[in-house]
Each structure stands twice: as C-alpha cells, then as structure tokens.
Amino acid sequence: MAVTGRRAGTFCLLLIVALCAQATRVQVFRAEELNHNSANQRLVIERYAQPRGGIRVGAGTVTGSEATGGRFDFKRTYTDGPLFAAVTGYSSQTYGNSQLEGTEDALLSGTDPRLSGWAVWDAVARRRNPGGDVHTTIDRAAQEAAVRGLGGRKGAVAAIEPATGRILALASTPSYDPGSFAGASADDQVAWNRLQTDSDQPMLNRALRQTYPPGSAFKVVTAAAALENGVVTDIEAPTGAPYPYVLPGTGTPLPNDTPACDEPGQSLDTAMTLSCNSVLGYLGVRVGLERMVATAEAFGFNEPRLDTPVRAARSVFDTRMDEAQLALSSIGQYDTAATPLVMAMVAAGVANDGTVMRPQLVDRLTRSDGTTVRLMRPAVYRQAVGPGTAGQVRRLMTDAVENGTGRAARIPGAVVGGKTGTAEHGVDNSGTPYAWFIAWAAPAGSAAVPPVAVAVVIADGGAAEVTGGGLAAPVARAVMQAVLTG
Image 1 (cartoon, rainbow, N blue to C red):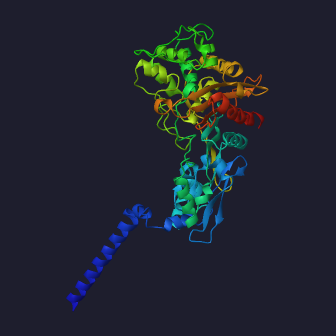
Image 2 (tube, rainbow, N blue to C red; image 1 turned 90 degrees about the vertical axis):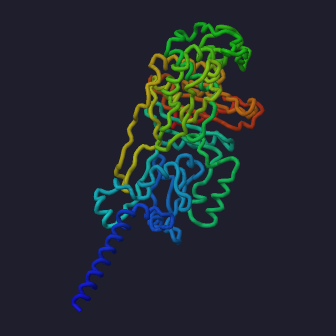
C-alpha cells in the first residue's frame, strides 16, 4: 500500500508540474501570440469597453464615442467626418484604424503606459486608464477653405506654417465619413464595401499618400538649384538658354506653352514669370544630375520615412538619368512625382530662408484631464538652400503672381509668391492634366517669416482648359487668406 501511495503521489506531483509548465507556457511564452490571435475577442471587447480619447482641432474635439448597447460598449463618432477624414483617419470595430487614429491608437484607447504614473500597478490590477487626447496643428478655417475650394473634384491641399512645420490644413477630396463604418453591424459592412468599390477612391489620402507629376511647380526647385550652385547669378540677366532648346542626345525640341517664351537667352525672372520650359530644362542640365538630386532631396524628395506622424508616400526625383531625362525632370515631368505635402515643403522652405522644417500634424498629446503627455517641438528637416538663394526665389515667385501665370492667387494687403504647374500624364499625355499651385503669403510690409505656405493639386479639372493658375491658384488663395485673417 505504501508503494502504491508513493506512486500515486509521484504521479500527482508530475501532473502538477506539467500543469504549471503548461500554464507558464500559455501565460508567459505564448501570451503575446494568444492576445493577438484573430479568434481572441477579449482585447477587442476591452478596447471598446470605454470611450475613446478625442482628436482635437483648436479648442474643439472632432471625434467622440457613443454607447452601442451591443457586444462592444462604445463606438467611434465623428463631427464633420468628411471635413477632417484626411487628418483623423478612421477607427472601426471591424476594420481597424488609420491615420492619426492608427498612429496614436495606444494613447486614444487608454493603453499607453504614459497615461499613468503607476504603469506597473495598472498592469497588475488590469486597470484601464481613460483614453488621452491628440491635439492637432490643424487650423479649422484653413481646413474648411481647402475642402470648400476643392469642391467635388479629385484633389488635395497641404498647408504648412513655414517657421515651424506645423500642418495647418490637410484635405483630400472626394472624402468619406469615417463614422459610417465605425461599428460592427451589417450597415457598417455595407458602407465599407461601398467605399472600397467606389471608383473615385474617397478613402485615398491624396495629400499624403498619392504622388503626381508636379509639372512646372517643380521649377521652383530647379531655380533654387541654379541659384545655389552659381549657374545663375543674376535673375534678370540672360541665361544663355537657346531657343529652340533641343533635348540633349535627341532631335526633339522642348516646347513652351506660350510664344512669349520662344526667344533665346530669356532671364530666369522672365522664365519663371512666363513658366518657360526651354529655359528651366536647360538650366537643370547645366546644374547637373548630382546637384539637382541633392537640392530635390533637401526639399523632401526621395525620403522613404517622412512621418507627420502619419507616413507620407515617397516623392521621387530619379537619381539615374541621361541629360534629356534630366531636362524633362527639371520641369516636373518624366518620372518626377510628388505628394502635395512635399510640394508644400518646397514652398515653405523658400519662405523660411531656405530652411525646411519637418512637417508635423500633432501639437501635443494629453491625458483626459488635460495634463501633457508629450509636447511636440519644431525640428529642422534640411537646410535646402542658403537665405540669399531663398530670397531670390521668393522674388521670382512674387513676380510670377504679380505679373505672370499666378495672378489668381493675389490677396489684397498681402505679399504672395507662387508657381503654377500643369502636369501632363497618361499614354502620349492623353490624360487630363493635373493642375498645381504652390505658394506662400505674408501680410504686406511684414519682415517676419510668412505664416503660411500651401500646395494644391486638382486631378480632374473638368474644365475645357486645365491650368494651375485657373483651377488651383484660387483654392490656394482661399486657404492662405483664411490663415492671414484668422
């Protein structure tokens, strides 16, 4: 009997050890895997067991939460959802998160350890902190002007405060209502599926995630490169550009859009005012590939990790080209492609004496009681060109608005500098051109850094004549005027 008892005891002990080992394996070594298993709904249920923190624009909150009475206690709501969708993104019980709802999810959902001074105790007690708030840099008046100006057309606006990099407006149209699929009902699924199959792609963030050939708006970069590298020393002197300018290594002349450009030796000032392809293409080749790439990259091109904190798509200026391709790229064609955000950085860098600031969409993160978790500070991205060069480029952009293709951007009582762009695309350039305008504006007589720079692209002009000056410049003017008068 004693032997049998010892065997039974040993067997029970082995069972206990095996159970402890299994419990340890499950609760420690496989905890992360099981927590994120798609079949485990506990974390999802916990996530929606309390209201989500707010995303704020100015003094107001543009998001909220409402009780559902269902399996998930609360779901996300949006105030003026389509107006701010390019900023907030979406938070859906079924489809996850995007944009700020995604990058700042831990803070908004209350799981960020920075929300509590007793993070270890909270973890042991499994206590959930209230969600924190994300305070954006968005200027409501500028955002409203951007969306109103774009109307129902496909397009985007990015506006920046040049001295700090704060994003003042980020708009993409057509837009969508993030609240239409925030829950887990059949109606939410229908709304999601409808958006996914919409040929207009309303959920595409065209301001951050879509690149377009910038056309003549890129000539600001080429002019800056020519001045910074001494290829041009006097903006009013003849450049030596021939007409016609035949693309190197080919028999193809680079055409201009206006006969006024069809004269040899135009000055850089005249070429920018009239937007002469032949002159800027010639100057890009004179600058050379290496120096053109360096200048473009200093303004934000070819950057794979441009986070606002939402990551922007990579804008492209090719690093391997022959001279004919370089000439075309120098006027914003060939393979050159840019997001509206990066083109706004170009205008902002020129406005800020050549210093490009890192763009930021978030001003600060706070707890639910308003105490600060993190305060974002301005950070320099690159010194694209020197102050002297930037001053000359501002003069070129001012002349383009006062006397050239950008007249529609003029604002009474303000100094405005800008550059139009009409970018061809498609097979044999058969697509409707993209209409661009980049600009900055300052109160007349002010010696301070201009308070706003903007980039506008309209991808389906729907007009008989598509030009950056006719379609995009009025939108830019409205956004800049909203900031100046705000």
